[in-house]
Amino acid sequence: MSSAESRTKKEKRRAGVLMPVSALPSDEGVGTLGREAYRFVDIISEMGMSVWQILPLNPLGYGNSPYQPFSSYAGDELYIDLELLEKEGYLARKRKPYVSKDKCKVDYDRARSYKDTYLRSAFRGFKKLNKDREKYEEFCRMDWVRPYAVFISLKRANEMRCWNEWPKAQQDWILNQKYDLSGLKQEIEYQIFLQYMFYLQWNALKKYANDKGILIMGDIPFYVGIDSLDVWKARKDFLLDKDGRPRFIAGVPPDYFSATGQRWGNPIYNWKHIAEDGFRFWLDRLSYSSKLYDIIRIDHFRAFDTYWKIPASCETAVKGKWVEAPGYQVFDTVLKEFPDIWIVAEDLGDLRPQVLTLRDHYGLMGMYIAEFSLLSDEEPQKNQLIYTGTHDNQTVKGWYVALDNETRAAVDKALKKYGTPGEGVCSRMLRFMLESNANLAIIPTYDILELDDAARLNSPGTVGSPNWEWRLSDFTELEERTRWIAQMLQKSKRR
Image (cartoon, rainbow, N blue to C red; front, side, top):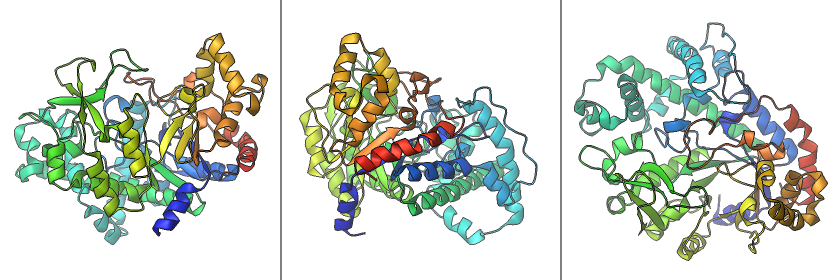
């Protein structure tokens, strides 16, 4: 694709939907890359949408958060579809149905336990059939595959403890290859199989979506977790002590979401070493993400300009300092190597002007959140992605109900031209978004369905349940709204 074609693609008036794979209906306790994912693509295609935004698909880490993954490259085996494995002939045994306590919530531990039995059975079937060997061996040659399989196998052998708590010889295998892994041979092969199945199923789903005219927008965190292959493998790229523990951690100071700030716990980058290495860490990460996604949304983009550096000894994010990052050097390097990459910059929060200058210098698409900005003087711009709210916000209905009477009246006034209060706030907000100047409008599925905060995906500053657990029990109501959304998209001249 030429630069002109890439620019035209980005400037087209588009509409899309935000829906995590985990939140899709399925009979496996969690959304998968199988039949229901394909049906979801069909539904949004029928609506006239051309973008599906997902959340990170990497192996879920602390608190089941997709933003604390065990790897920036691997996929979580939770999303592997068992029915597709059956069709490939890998699963000979008949599956018992997954019994869900609540079809609108993911119980991650139960789903993992249920799926692991069948995935291990499929692994045995895969080895027995031994088909498509060349394709499998080609996959295995990717430089992250075996290291990840070793990493996760050693984690399992150490009761899932962080790598910096393993025996020293195991910690250092990635550096010197000296630790004897023969006792883990079977588990390592199994983990490679899981990654191969994820890779095949994801690429088949993405091709199906692309063939339907749907672009996939992936979401990658700015930071990686300490308990990850990324850090285990590239320790010099992070500010760690001699025992492999972070000396400083990431987060943000007190803000709208938290009076004590957000203490994320991710290790801070050693930008000096990353720069000396030609920013290879970021080049490799974006290169692989570009193969998986058509559009890449970088979470916490402002940290390319300045990042909040918290001493690891601090229990909150209150004590810290802003430090400048080499953002211009990073993007000069990235865009030289990948001139047509489509990046969306998550540029939210209390920003200094230089963050927006950095974004605009490279023509990156920024973001507009209607829940935050509807009552401000700020208008959506063409080179922006407009949301009702992101995965970190309340649903529109939950947000509207929680407003005080005066603010709710102001919202009704701002949305007056988009419908009457009796019609419901979601439909009015959707029309506001779709008719705005923003080139890309993304609607969370729960706002199409006009759901309350029981469907909220995440509350920043909190960890664990009920974050990331919401999912659809079926597509009945979504399918019923297909024509309604299609009419709004036609009126707003979006695709």
